[in-house]
Length: 89
Image (cartoon, rainbow, N blue to C red):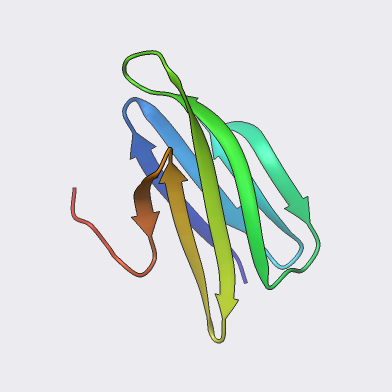
């Protein structure tokens, strides 16, 4: 089971990788957080600069809901991506 979620935030690319043995958060190809092992739920944290140059927090929530894996990506308090809601754009 390998899942990859990628979203754009301004000029940045946020990538979350989920495998049986780890979860990883990348921003522009740089690893910002990693959790090894098998977990039913995971939180990953990182930082990204917005278009104004201010640093914002990234929070990723991954949960296992048989038979699916769900992912939510937040920047600041804003939900940027959810496997439950697919946005066009």
